[in-house]
Each structure stands twice: as C-alpha cells, then as structure tokens.
Image (cartoon, rainbow, N blue to C red; front, top):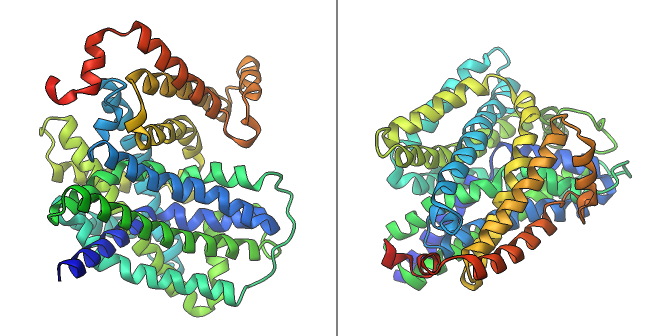
Length: 442
C-alpha cells in the first residue's frame, strides 16, 4: 500500500507540475512557431523544447539541489539580489505578464468564441474569483490542481494532439524563416516557464514534504514527478507545433496568435472544437494562474515581514491581473519581449548554476556569470526597445552565437571563470566560510 501511495502522489504532483507550466503562452506560441517554421517544424520543436521543457524542469532540480528555496539559489551572489531579482520576476513577469495574459486568453479564445456577447470584464472577474478561491489556501494548492483541474485538461489536450497527427489539416510548406531553431528558442522565452519553474519549485517541493516524504524518497518523488510533467509537455508541444506547421499553407504568416489557434481547432474539430478549446483554455490558464498567484502571494508576505498576509497578497495579484488583463492578449504580448530579454538569460544561468551547485567552488562563479549575463541582456533589451546605439549593436554582434540569439552564453561562461579566479585570490576567508558552511553562520 505504501508503494501505491507513493505512485499515486507522484502522479498527482506530476500532473500539477504539468498544469502549472501549461498556461496561456504554452497554447498560443507552439502553433505560431510551427506556422512560421513550416517544413522545418522539427528543428523548431527542438529549440522550443529546450526553453519550454528542459530548462523549466532543470529549474525544479536546481531548487531541489539547494534545499527547496529560491533564496538559497541566489545566496552566493548577495542577500539583496534575491529580493531585487525575485521582485523583478514576480512583478515584471508574473504579475504584469503571465497572470493577466492567462485571463485575457481565456476570454478571447474561450468565452468570446462561445458567447460573443459576454464582455471581457465579466470573464476576467470570474476568472480571478476562481483563481483566488483555489489559491487562498496555500497548504493544498498543488493537490487541488493535480486532483481536480489537470486530469480533464490532459485528456482534452491529448485528444487534440492525436487528432491533429492522425488527421492533419494540411501539409507543412517551405517558409522564409531562416533559423527555426533559434526563433523557437527565443520565442519560447515568452511562455515564461523557466521563471515559472523557479517560482513554483518551492511549493511543489513543499507539497511533497507535506505528504510526509523526506530525504531520498522526497527527491525520488520530485524527480519522478518532474519526468511525468516533461513527457506530458513534450507530447503536447510536439502536437501543437506540428498542427501549426500543417496550417502553414492555409494561414498568412502575420495572423494573430489567438486567431490562428481558433482557426486551427475549428478546421480540426469542426463545431465541437470551439467548446473543447474553451474548456482547454480555461483549465490551462486557471491552473497556471492559481500556482503563480500562490507563489507571488507568499513572496509578498515574506518580503513585507507578514505586514501583507498571504491571502491579501494573493488578492492584490488578482486585482492587478484583472486590470492589466483588460488590455487583451496581443497588447500584453507586445510589451513583454523586452522584459523577457532582460531577465530570462539571467534566470537560465541561475538554473544551470543551481543544477551544478555541488561542484561550484565559490560564490565568485555565481557573481561573475550573473554580472556579465545581465550586462549583455541589458544591451540586447536596449536594442529591442529602439535604443539602437551603434556601439552596443556592434558589441552584441561580435558575441559568439549572437546570430542565434545566444549572445549571453559565452559572457556567462567567461564571467563564471573570471569570478571564480578573482574570488579565490581576493575574497577574505570569512566569505569562504559563509558560503561553504552557511549553517554555522546562521
């Protein structure tokens, strides 16, 4: 019975992790990327899966490696870095992008398609009322998502995917996209899943511990649940991206993301497609919104030293999300790319540092890697928002792999190496002790 219980809990947590990752962007972006890639959809899928599956799941492993808390991952850099960077992630991406986009997507792809006369404000108010109801009790958020919301979502998604593969709506055509891999890799930033992994790993790990698992068993459950989520995401992303590629000869390249998804599902499933799509959208967006709301609510409680309670923090997230969600999906997408360009590479480097935490010799590795990554990301962001300073553009173009969107990669490696050496020879002995034996300094 004990073994059966472990399997049952692992499946529930794996389903919950899948659902937390699979939100609005995860349904919108794969078909658009497939449409742009056409016959090269497989290259695009590889790029998308690195950013959309591998890195988010590695984020869970990274947090697990440092004791289940995000602040432990950033501790080698500086105490202030956790608060500042986490605030930027929570507010800049979570509160201002991820959660509002989910509500707007629910209306535009779900409710509006079925009941056009319902105004967006009604959909968004109901969406956040349900989100707050599920998120207001932090102790069982994951179980609620895994037991009640995810199973139906998974069944519908698998049905859509297999229908699209067995009975494709068309044949992929050759498109003008020159580098489908890097295009997919960078556009997958906008799913926000690496950040979601960093956000939600602590509550996933807390849920596992809450079931009474410790030590090796806890790690086994966490890794197994992560694998379940990864397999589910691979199947769904592959199907959705291929569905978009199959429509590359049917839809213009500049079609809006939401219109493309609606059109594809309508061609695939006919009149019943609108109903299934509405249910899928609502479930996908709600599960992610609930998870991220819970995380941000807890962060606001922590950063204010309990002056803002968890429930009030979650309520604030819902109110802000409702206000921004009224802008609509495309307007939200339009202002998000610079935010992701600035913060996402730093988050990716943090994840890799966490994965290899046990073999990193000193804090200088963290500091050097993050500093140079952030500088290059900031330069790229300046270009994205129109501040095209020739010297900066030339600097970025000189970086290896810059044409593929990875201009930050070599600076991160160089920064890690330089930081390691500089710290080793210049840092005082007390810093060494505080990094290696944090328990004794607590």
